[in-house]
Figure 1 (tube, rainbow, N blue to C red):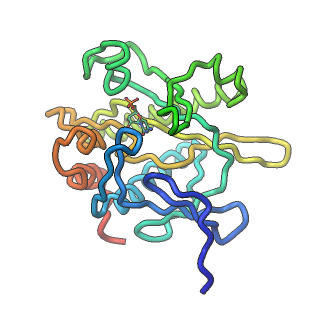
Figure 2: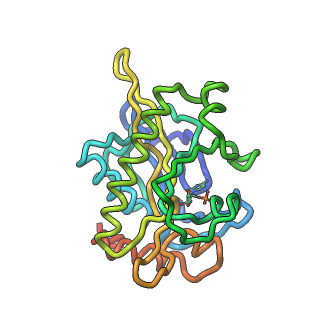
Length: 243
Ligand code: C5P
């Protein structure tokens, strides 16, 4: 069998050419990084968990009409996705002060925010993904005003859906990051949620105890990351070790 062609390798995933034009295979690695790759470990089973959890979230989003790149899961570590033109921005939605926002603005971690706050970061490893304003985005042509409006709307819809799903299993969705891509249909373009949604890209706190069930466990050396993600999967009824 011919070796398939790798299209892109990132810190936690690999993209391969898909079986049909316009498709890609997204492979979830066990590699876990923090601080723009400064801290790096292999965490056994993390890729399997994120593959299943991202499938769960993307399918849930599709069921309420939020477009995503997800087509279907292929096996324990791979999913078939639509090839999209990625917008070079990370869209972060925050419900509670934490992480870089707490640091930047001197807000206590855990302080509720008056409303969901959306931020944009430029995807650029060399620069450490700097926060950017809507002015920067338009002026430098990373996205149009229409794209920006659509990204805000997608971010808020994902936030509503994910917050509700998590609240149902006793977890607070503190914040999360999504990446968005363009798909072209004739003369029209549509924005879809791409990449992954997983505990790597969200902050998830147990509502009762405040226990962290996300990548901060790794970033801050708080315990076993795979156990934390397994707990999220267990509560959601996503069973990573069965197919
Ligand atoms: O670090 P910061 O507080 O800005 O992160 C906000 C949210 O975005 C967190 O849930 C974090 O996991 C996620 N994030 C991410 N990838 C990045 C930066 C942040 O998934 N490169």
